[in-house]
Image 1: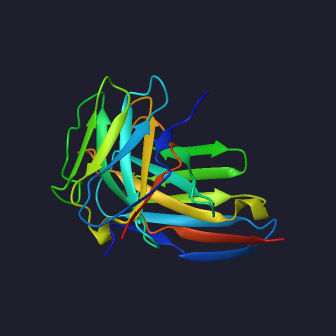
Image 2: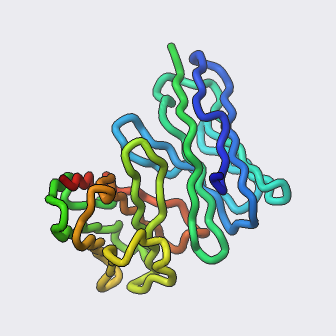
Length: 108
Length: 115
């Protein structure tokens, strides 16, 4: 069982739809990262969160430390948002664990 | 400015040979990370450097793997006596400070194929 659970594994949406990707973890962490991996393999760091909420453009990330849960939201989705979205948690001992990723496809 | 660079971009080696992978972080970034992504698999954390020191090497898959960082800049990941299961994309990332402080900047990766 993965220590970091992401859902859904795969998600297909129509352009313009609001998208939510979820990440749950089992023990206390010091931080959580959301990453985007493009079809060509390149990885971009979207957010690093230790509490609350962050927003960059159409992307919003939230974290609830008590519930050990984070969400990544994409508003007004676009085909260029198609990618794999990965959640990663950082433990207090500087160990890091990754979710299996959510493959998002946005159709025009 | 320049991003994180890795070399080589591709490496094909025979089983049993040693390989050395290089990472040049963004200038001024004190934290450097190595990850591995096997074909069709998720990301795996290998090791983290703060400056030249790695607080915890337990993420390295076996004692055939070693990593060093000198001068607070370039890092090398060395795999001795490569095995077919070592085939993967090895990714490096850097950040201004540690894992819980800043977002990371990823390099393009080195694709290693062990035949």
